[in-house]
Every structure is written in structure tokens, then in C-alpha cells.
Image (cartoon, rainbow, N blue to C red; front, side, top):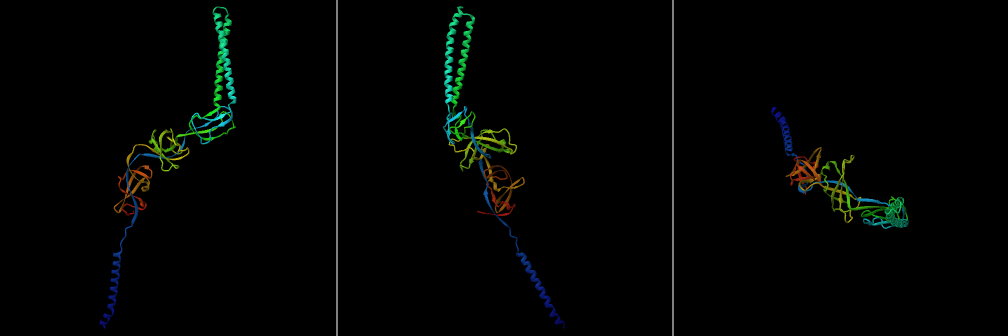
Length: 364
């Protein structure tokens, strides 16, 4: 009976132990087979360049006429003729319009006649003075008679002077009936037509001079110390893509605009072909010194953390974080003052998801 009980109870216990060992063994094997897969981040890189570049300040500006003037008549009258239209080119001294000169011509003729009469009277009085002067010396005329002829000479001389002044004024009014341009340029606006009655000071024509042309632009307060008269200025306009126009800085305003904290400046730009027009918007580059060797990187590669600036470099298959100090902006690139030497592979796409030491794959 005891033997039978041994055989009936032990096998069950043995089978249970075997099953436990199998489960434990399987679990151990499963744990050994589980591995951590390192994440790889795809990035795109560019080579850090070292270039010889001139330092400059960027701004935006507007082209303005070098000079502009509103032409007004200097005499009253009816506009007899206009010789120009809007857009017409004019030369300095060119007749732009004529005011009806009939009255002024008649005044001139009367003044000429009055002067001749005054000069004839003076000549006669001088002849009489010479005769009485001789008689006075021989005491053949009285002192009163001599004084009278002396007075008449003085009065006749004054009449001649007044007649000459009147003639000069009449001639000037007659000349001014022709309206002339005070400068070379072009007609921007015509405000009268033939047949209009105009008075002295009535605006007739608006003349602008555009060669050279002025470029007016504003510079931020932080860049004001870089400005010096005579510096080279380059700029682009939308009407001529790809073309760079150049000139010289000729005027720096004495004070900043308190609202924008910017300083106004003006450059003079040669415009012999008239390609540049007043009102054009300009993207300005003001060169502030000679060329220097500068390490530059794409602006898009820079990451900002408060005052900290950093980039990621690719070394082997790993990303390395590098803190940098930046300088001036050169188009789509930024100068690096500290942190890079040139030749490094810098991440330009995908850097926002990187951390120092992360494994990367450089996309080609």
C-alpha cells in the first residue's frame, strides 16, 4: 500500500516542477532577446564657409528727385502758349511757356521813349550850363542865374536816372513774360493750359531733376556709428531684378527719429539713362569698411535660446552642439565671431529636433 501511494503522488509533484522550470526558462530567454534600438535623426548639412566680405549695413529706402521746383509766372497775364507736356525733358533756361506780352511790350516802348526824352533834356540843359558857366566866370550873369541852371542840371540828371530805372523794370517784365526753366529735368505735372489767366505766383508746372537722383533711407540706432560721408552705397529695385545700382553717402541727418529710433541719411546716385524713377522702393546695402575674412553660416542653421546662440555640427555619425557668437548679417548668411573656424559640416535642416550626441543620418 505504501508503494502504491508513492507511485501515485510523486509524479504529479514532478510534473509541476518541470512546468515551472520551463516557464522560468522561457521568460529568461525572452528577456535576453529584448534590445533597445537607438533612434537615428535625418538631417541635411552644409559646409561652414570662410569668405572675404565687406562689412555693411542693410536698410530700405525710397528714391527721390535730386531737386524739384514748382514754376510760377513772375507777371500777370493770359497764358499764350505752353511748350511742354507732362513727361517732357527740359534744359536749364529753356522757355516753357509764354504770357501775353502785348502790354509789357508797350510799357517797354514807352519807357524807351521816356528815357530818350530825358536824355535829350539833360543834353540841352548841359549846353546851357556850359554857356552860363562861362558867363558867370566873366561876371556877366548873376549868382541866382547860375544857381538856377545848376539846379536844372541836377534835376535833369535825376530824370534820366529814373527813366533808366523805369526802362530796366519794363524790360525785365517783358522778359519775364517768357517762363523759363531754372534747371534741367523733366515735367512732372502741368497745372495750366493755354488761355488760362494767371497771376504772379500761380503754380504752372512742376519740374523734377532725376540725374543724379537721391536715395533716402533710415539706419537703426545701433548702426549709426558706422556711417561716414562718402561711403559706397549699393541698392536694388524691383523694376530691375538682379541689377545693383551704386552711389555715395552724401548727407547724414543731425538727429534720430524719436519714434522709430532710426537716423535718416541720403545718397546721390548717378542716373544718366533715367532708369531710376522717383518713388522706387530700394533695398539698400551701405558698405562700412574694407573686405575681411569672415566665417559665415546660413541664418536658418542658428538656434536661439534667450541670449544663447548655438548650432549643431555633424562629426562622424553624431551631432555635436556648439555655442557661437554672431556678427553682422550678409544677405542670407550670418557672420560667426567665435565658435567655428570654417570647413565644419553644419546642420541646416533638422537641427530643431537634435540634442548633443544624437546619432544622425545625413541626407544627400
